[in-house]
Length: 409
Image 1 (spheres, rainbow, N blue to C red):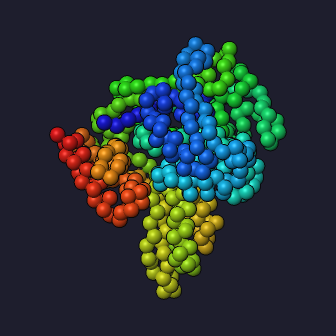
Image 2: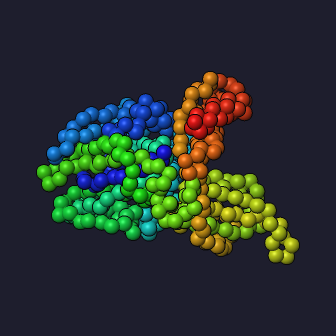
């Protein structure tokens, strides 16, 4: 079964509200999340949740505690935050997603302020709790492996005071992130959608699905403030969908798989050292690339070179083009809209003799036809047990094969 999540933005959206709603809906193992957050290097982070009432609705409110006070700062450069994420023990998927979310916000800030992306200096978003909001949101989105939808996006009016001075609501960077989405202005002088909330919406908008299925769970995430005008909450609804309910089937796809539109960025390079190309590949994945392929080619005048081919979601293409232009020697990139067909995937946490490993299962219609252990989980277990990675991977493959057999019954 596939999972679809719908967000009802009654009070808008902020990072802590998204996490709180996911906790209330039973999607979050708080202990595992705390372990992940503690690896970012901010200290012994704890996720503290409590039930509160906002307006007429009761839900969960969360806050972070326990970090090292020496790490507190209300401003950090994008490069500093990216380094913290890269050096953490987060899974590669969460690292990529969190980095892409920060880069998406960074690109919006750079555009608004007319500066280069590398010079972006996050103010309020650079604070510890904001970094934790981003990483926790990336962790949740990666864990649930769902499609998303959301209702009307409310935005307030008036102005707010920030490190940049007095600015209109929604904040310019927030508005940039929400471009292309339908907004509903409310006559309330408050910030309904924060920059973190806008980055989350921009992320889940790239994982669209049909609001349809069996209601499995729901939860309310509460903001910090309590308003008389509205309930400051977001509702997260979890739906279970059968293979026939996938949006791709409604669009007329062949049964059993999904089709999605993406962008391919292609260029040939013959004057960059191979080790530098490897670094570019890593930067592209960090910026949100779905796939990066390098292949040897014979170019004009008999020169040997490499073809760089990057697959990405359309909304990330500009950020990835910037990486290519800044970090390689190419003067041009071909941008090609393409369609790809993928198996429906579900993610499962299985118990091996060496510890827990996530397993990805591929479905052709209602039939589970393949399963693959997450390499990063196997690598971490190998380090913990001082074993070769392939030993752990083989054990994980054995359990994954048994999972596949169980799914077939």
